[in-house]
Length: 319
Image 1 (cartoon, rainbow, N blue to C red):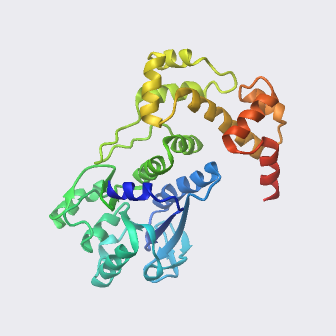
Image 2 (cartoon, rainbow, N blue to C red):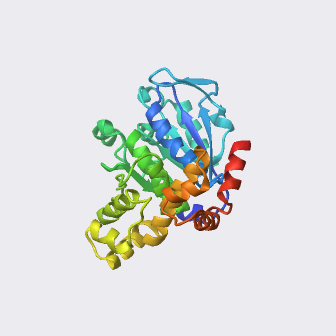
Image 3 (cartoon, helix red, strand yellow):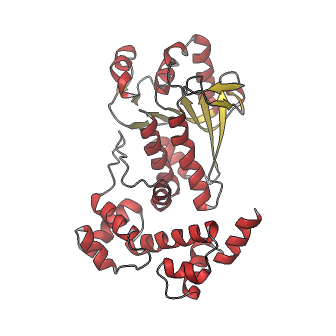
């Protein structure tokens, strides 16, 4: 995964262009940009920025009639990743002019990704020749017949060098979650998943990353159900069906953090939510997140987020 290695060496915010066509899928668009927005919000950093693009600029309309005003036309855009997002009517979009525009854009973006049926347009432009790729599974056989120079895989998403392809709207969420985890740590990806009430989302793809360890998922569920009255890690492990040592090993492998750190972060994420979204006192928030008193919660909160809860609340209220 060449582009992962490249991005890992760059600390700047990721600049993403989302190329929309008339008939694009609202679902696919939301599953792409909402996790990025959530990552920014939860990290309190501008990790990602995105712009909506259109072939000629102007307004594009989704398959359900939602109009979106493009920030700029494709020819004026550049950045880290170009996300090509047609949906219905994609076969009518790959004319010579469109192919040329995509090839030129591929020189201005480090990575090109085709979501839903975007793989078809990428292949028409010659951007997938000799690459592994996938597409919406309803089009998989037609795609393989039309583009024999592409190694077509029945995967949710495929990463081959600086080319990324994805099979549909739900898989788009999996792809973006994978990217967030790779670039900014699995702990942040976990927080984003919690925000959307998703756990253990399928992440299998041609790069070999499998579904989240079931033991880890069970442990996360146990932790999530016991934030106000935290359990000893030995009990968490027991309820997850393993030893504490096994849980330590698997959670480090899956999330890059110890169970102690993950549990603490989950409690403090809840504390942050209560601080920014409610008028509860710090003392009440401490009780609801399993701390013996407000002072203990405030110390942990400051260590984790770099600011005490009262100051974070004031900052959010004045924003």
